[in-house]
Image (tube, rainbow, N blue to C red):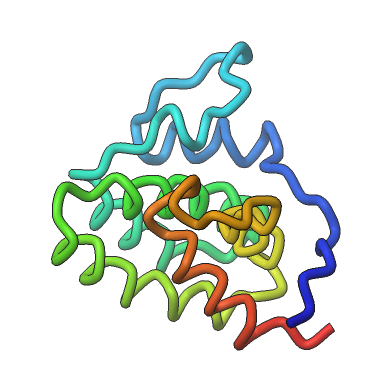
Amino acid sequence: MNINEPELRFPTQKARIELASELNLEYHDGMQDWEWEVAKSDEVERYISHYRTLNDEDKKFALMEIIIQAVTDQKSKLEFEKYWNVVKDYLIKGFKIHAYSVYYWSCFDYENIDDCWEVTPYMRNLWNNCNVG
């Protein structure tokens, strides 16, 4: 299993501001973890629909962080699985854009997966299947 950390990537301020405007999300400069702060589990379908319209890689990266958080916060395993099955396809197709997100959410620093997020085992599996170097 290759778990070498990919190149560090962060959402850009420009992408955050544009997404906040497009999706009517709260935004101010003091929101360090903006993507996770604004994510709402009941809005995941709206986020996914908007992701499908994007061409800008920075906006895709930032929005995917919101989507992953919203999927992780689903209230039932059934809903989690439903949205994960949609999102994983976008992560696979856009792996070059989302490699750092997949790595981050895989939580490789923790041996005990119970100390991680609901999505972590899924992300680890995706990492193992997509990461070729």
